[in-house]
Length: 383
Ligand SMILES: [Zn+2]
Image 1: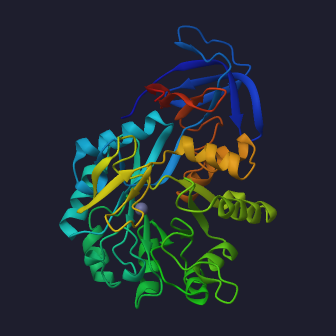
Image 2: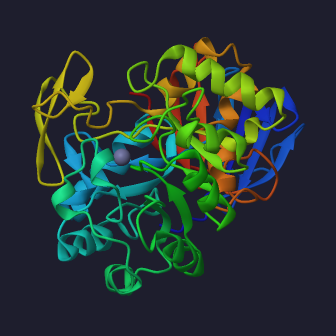
Image 3: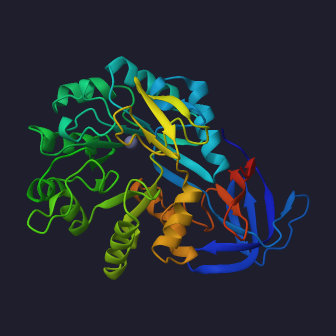
């Protein structure tokens, strides 16, 4: 959806990389053309924000669904509905995250998501995963790592696939790490029983992201520091599902304080891991070919296994801000600049700077989303 929107956004609290300051934001041809004391260039629509925060739109590396719909179903209308739902919560870019299934179905899901406004690409959460750490994913469809299986799965979608989660301890997985990198995607550890040494070896071989840190991986034990220990000590970027359910609030604080102490908060991205029930009433929904049930704000399989979340990034940011005593600027980087950097898009997205794409969010003083703009056009108002 290319647009050539011009807009003068007035009287905003601009959340820039160098702090919050009051000013205007001039959008020309869908990009930020000027910030600060910008005068009206005339004959340009104006939007007075009443002093609201103007921040970059949120970026979510891990979204399965929302508004009742599931990316893995392979329906373009459903894909559009999911992106529109998350846009109401400030997310202007997301990775459509596809669960293991029959190859044809996974490929249909990729085709349905590619080109949908707000979908930045595909996150393949599998199928080269460890059945011991399946979580809510269906291990029936897990595959042993193989270059041939990978090439057949991704053929024709190489440019769209941005992230691939795999279990590095499986035989042949380390060879796939290079293969994933070769198509320009980020090789990520997840749904893995890797020991500390196995995970560390994968980071040395080029894996540089960790899918939902702490979930579906080996934990931090003092004699077996596990995948979590290896992830923290690596330079890899880390995802956290900060919904108060997937990880303990103290774990959020431990991770944030550890990274902040090393000056590495830039490695952390909050993700929603949202599934179809996000934004919906209690009931039963689908994740791939499985039924998932929403009750009391938690999404689970019939056997009580957690099955993603109902989280959206506006809420994730507020949770992190409170749990880990972050400043607004720091909390915002966890849903903007940091995920942009994972994708190599940090000069274009996730930053309020001149030249960046005008994918923006206006936040009320209590940080609820007031409106969302794609390339300078208002696409949704609040939720
Ligand atoms: Zn997931």
